[in-house]
Length: 262
Image 1 (cartoon, rainbow, N blue to C red):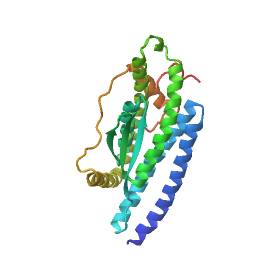
Image 2: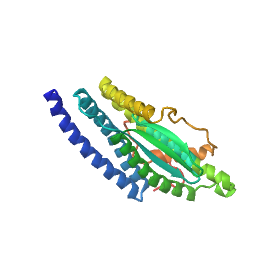
Image 3: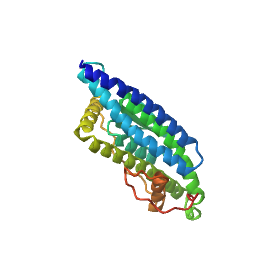
Image 4: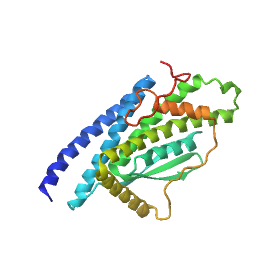
């Protein structure tokens, strides 16, 4: 092994561990604060760090491969979604996982649940599951606040109310996915070909593991689902960008909606 490579990898690995601890702390704060704006600020900071952490881990893995050492294991982990909104949530959480660029997603459908199979490097899958768990808590709180003040619900049937809430959740989750994808694109550009090269290698290993575990299956694709209104979707999207908008992504600020004034 090249001595200079070893001296570079060790500090990088130490930095990655510190970053992971900070990400975990930020997600916990986002879950526990009662203030939507504060939760969103914590989440945005965590997202930036998650992208950097993923790139750092990919670099460590690539260096190990070059040195002939064992690379980070590829794993498969299942994430279950239940309840009336599971179809829309499955679509939104799939978009978030795929935004990380190095993880692949497969779907299974049961009589009362949707199962996402996340396949990729251990650290990549682990941080996505942590984010999923945090977002479930934040999404539930955001939807409750929005729905309490939603002016059209007295005029909707039970089915239409379900569609509205599903559309809110889909707007929330796909907006988070868009932010993460934009951050990955930004980091890849700033790192020139180096970042993209190590991420491509990471993706290829995930693809190989999918073929090994499930040779007859394909990666998850967006599904067609029953639609709610554009108003509900816009409210969910706004909830996904509320608070300190990440200037690196340059998402335009939106006017306040009912239920989100502080």
